[in-house]
Every structure is written in structure tokens, then in C-alpha cells.
Amino acid sequence: MKTIKMIKIDADKCTGCQSCELVCSAFHAEPKYSINNPRTSRIRVFRDVENHLFFPRFAGPYTDVECLGRNPLVINGKEYPECTLCPASCPTRELFKEPDTGIALKCDMCGEPTPEGGPMCVQWCEKDALTYVEREVSD
Image 1 (cartoon, rainbow, N blue to C red):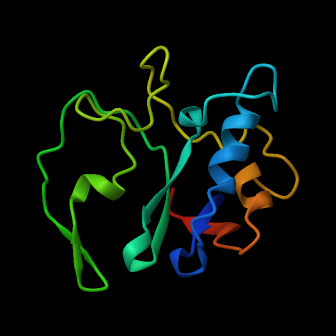
Image 2: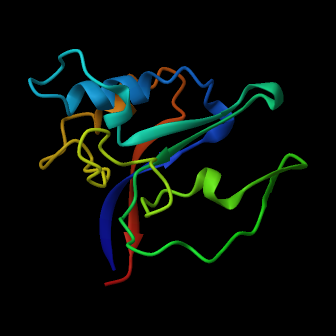
């Protein structure tokens, strides 16, 4: 067993403020922390304001084929399309693609080594919906 660091999401604490999105896009901007395009963020908050549901999703791996799974997700009795909370960048979605180049984005934990206190999204989350935790995984 080895220990890895990861970002844990507690959707019940997320208020949908999107500060994680803003600080992520600012951290990855050139020059760093300059005015930039929020669509370059490696984290996005799914927002269903009517049902008071907010769910942060990190950019996952790129896949060059479209997913065949189209199962609806049921959250608090309401159905959402499976793509809504999918972290992958694929040919049929623009989510998690760099808006100017179309290059797939992936969460990089704000670089190596990760900043003290964890990735920027964790540091700026005032409600602790995002926390930086250790987890044991098998080799």
C-alpha cells in the first residue's frame, strides 16, 4: 500500500460560489494571477440553483472516444444526464478544453510540488467543501 494526496469533495458544503474556478484559472494564467478566461479552470462547479445543488468536478483524463454510457444520475430525487458530472474531456464536450486551442485540460494539483496547504482551489474554499487528504491505495 502507498499513500497519495488527493482533493476530497464534500458537495453538501459547497455553496456554488465558484471561487475555486476563479483561483484555478488565475493560477494557470500567463502571467500567473493575471486577468484570464475562467474557462481555463481545471475545476468546474455544476450548479442547479433551483434544487440548491452545487457539485465541484475536476478535469480528468482525456478520452478520444465518446462515452457509451448514458445512464441518468439521480440526486435528491432529480435526474441529471450522466455527462453533467463526468470529469473527462471527450470529442463531444467542450468542458475541460482550453478555449483557444481545444487542448484537453487536466487537474495538475497546481503543480509539483503542490503548494503548501494544497492546491489553490482547496486553499480558497471558505466552506471546506474541498479538502486535501491522504488516501491509501494499492500498488
